Amino acid sequence: MAELDLLEQELAAELPGHMRAFARAHAEGRVPPPAPLIARLSSSLDTVLAALPHERLADRAVALLRLLVPLAIESDPAVAAVRAQPATWDGLSALSAARNSVSRDRFGMDAIALIHRLHGTPDPVVEIDVPGPLIAGWMDRGPAIDAVAIDDVWHAIATRFGLTGSVRIDRSATASPRTFVIEPLREVIVVVPQVIDSPMTRYTVLHELGHAAIALVQPPGIPRVLDEAAASYIARLAEPPSWLPPRWVNELAVEARLRRFALAAMLDDVERSLPALPQLPGRIPPPALWTDPGAQASYVAAEAIAERLRKELGVNPPRGQFARALAAERDRIDGRSVF
Ligand SMILES: [Zn+2]
Image (cartoon, rainbow, N blue to C red; front, side, top):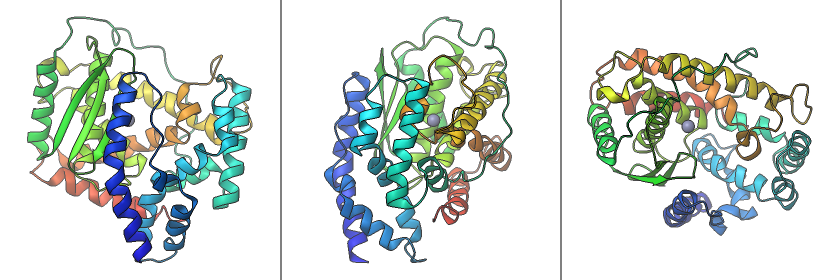
């Protein structure tokens, strides 16, 4: 299908420059640049939706939809208008209704349901759980690590898993940690906090390095659940016993992971009820529900995959095994993502 080839080529040409500008804007706390026009055109979406029913093209179509669907929903004027308001629970309900309206018109199902299907989390995963208290010591500050220590830990991970490609670490005093795939399989920029001086901030660095790791072995359109599973798998290297440099290892990491899991399960439950609001955990909705719809289900389901990776790969996986294990997981998810 020539149109699909052309669309993939145009995106591959446009996205690296866009992602580089996006990473810079994110680190500096500026409004990110708009996605390339080709990614927002209604005709691009038509091309992909036309390819979706063809078995031979379905995986490529799904990979493209993971990029195009959120752009189509979030750039709708009605959705953008509600999202620009301050975040409140009633606002989240309105935002969810606006997202559903666009999604139903264009794709025939609600927005969260569609995102869950595309990213390998169609079914609710766990019963709601109540997160325990903050983990004592997890956020305690000590000596900060420097850029060399981050390079060292990345080098240790890249060597162990046979990863090649460029990973640049940018520091930001204000931005949330985030990974930007500039060119899949080749180049990644990771934004991490300016000051990394607690078990929690070291964990966030490892988590983002996990996103960088999968971006270097998997082609674009990675299902979110697998992306988060790779991040969780690498972050679990902080759990003793570990071959990471000692300052990256912390015995509180297991407890902190279980707490994050419970929080995500609770927020996933809230998100699956939208636009209804049967329960309100907190005074205002967490930013993730506002700007990253559908992500909580991926955080939850990712843990089972991360567990499986840890079991299958063992402590010292043969070179190439990390990439092969992720490819096998992706095949399984992609096959279930067609709608
Ligand atoms: Zn993540």
